[in-house]
Image 1 (tube, helix red, strand yellow):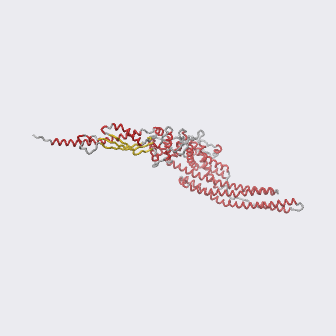
Image 2: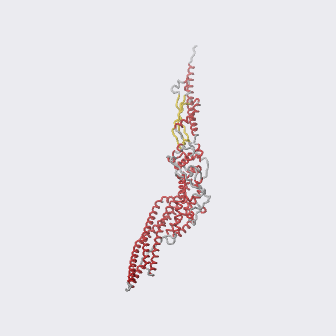
Image 3: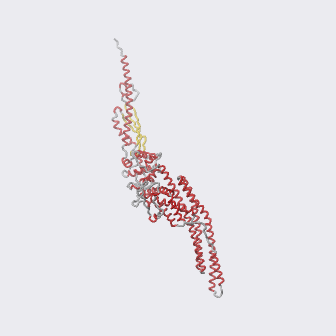
Length: 634
């Protein structure tokens, strides 16, 4: 009986097809597993690489940074960390891995944004107490208002001094006229005593006094022109600052500065009369010369009479005396028929000296007696701030506050009194100067501008203080001056008073105390009656207030509007200087924040290589390439 094998053959064919399908599926799954295995190996390798973060940078500043190696070194280290995975790849049969470095991101890239991001991530894990009781933007609007106020009042304060100088010259001219009157009176007395020698001497004195008049007028015109020009320049210069002021402050400043224009207009009216005195002095000198000629004639007649005793010369001598008498009595009298001058030049001069002392020498006044200013300096040539990068984008309010809090926590300021390459690190971040002294001086100047504006606003909002300032202005100006000059002197008094209070505030801050941003009457320290003692003692009083914010808080306010890119790179300057003490070759520009790499490797097929089914996979190679992308940032 014949047997048929068709079923067996059919089943074998089906078995081969099903087996080939299963092996193909298994090979596909193995390939996917191999790719995933390679991804895990790459992720593990890059995590291991990033675990080599710079320890000092983390310990001192809580910043992660991978110290940069060469590209080849990074590749070798990645392969080294992948090696255990390659050796134990088992059925995945991974071999010959290759690392291609696509991109390295450094902490100083994009204007230091990645440094900022690490700071924000770290500070976001904790809690802190903000120095801002209300909205920082609102507070900074008050600060900007104060800075604009300080700028405007400072410039107009200088114009007040120019106006006072004009009044002083007019007072010198008035004193000259008084001296003329005194000499004329003495001439009349000498005339009564028939003392020709004395009269002749007084003529010379009077001519000498009169010759000073043109010079005084020239000085007056020069000062008046300068004042008029400066008032116009200041108005144009401060137009933007005035526009930034709050409505109340703007109204006050515009009202007060209008007085400067009023003064200039009044002075223009006086000027015609003052200039006319120049021509009058010349005609008066001619009158004196005519008097001197008559005196010479009289002296000759008296001399002839003494030589010629026979003839009677009494009529000629009497006529000569009559001529001299007529000349003296007909001498023109110079007058100033307008208000001018100031009464108490001593106090006015003290105001000017006090303003100059604090404006130019505040640094020596505010440093606490028990502290010496650091003289440390650095060479900024190799620091990150000399290679600023672009691409920075802004941060929101919360992030800016976090960065400011970080800076206050990890960088020292004057009140910390520590020993680092630069002792005043926070001040350096604000100013970027080469020495501690310069950075502290610039910081003090910035604080002075803010406090002076804020204190000025306090004075003008306090009716009692404004009344006292006006009373002192009236004492200095006196009753014979232009009413407008009293207002200008008051402007100067308020400025100096605010300046003295500001200097006291800064000394308090540098001594570790606190000063409120917006003061009340109880917070005020400088008494108007005693501010001149600063000139005598060359010292400021103490402010022991515990209300308000401290020195670091004020620096954080300044940081709030500091250019973020400059701030970031100056932070990196300090980090590099600090760590460079123990590691000479440390550079912040070498600190890696992130890496992007491609990892490729070969892999051999397993299931497609089984001899039973090799024909079915004859179109496939025995090995193939796999590639995965691995990236990491701190």
